[in-house]
Length: 101
Image (cartoon, rainbow, N blue to C red; front, side, top):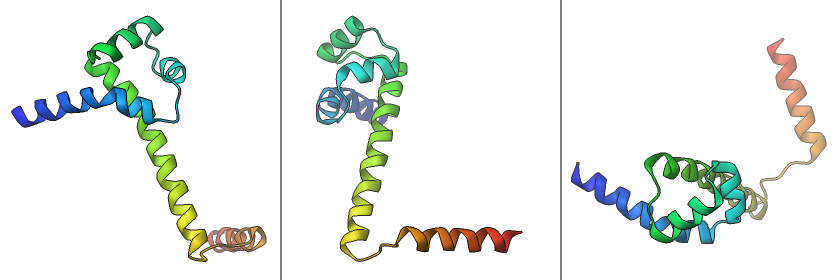
């Protein structure tokens, strides 16, 4: 159990850098998490977020990580020629829908 506590402590300590490197501005994180502005900045400075607050911040940052990963995957697909024209995609979707009916 002790390693988990250490990992949590490291994660909380890393939050200021994660937030700084995030494309979200602090005010957007404050809005999304519902943490008051004064509390957010104080806890960011002292690295003293509660478990619930860490969870809220992490959820917002996780969504951003997923978006970034999908963008990178899309860029890789384009670079490797795995692209479809809009009409091709629509035709493929129509065929899939017809096959289901």
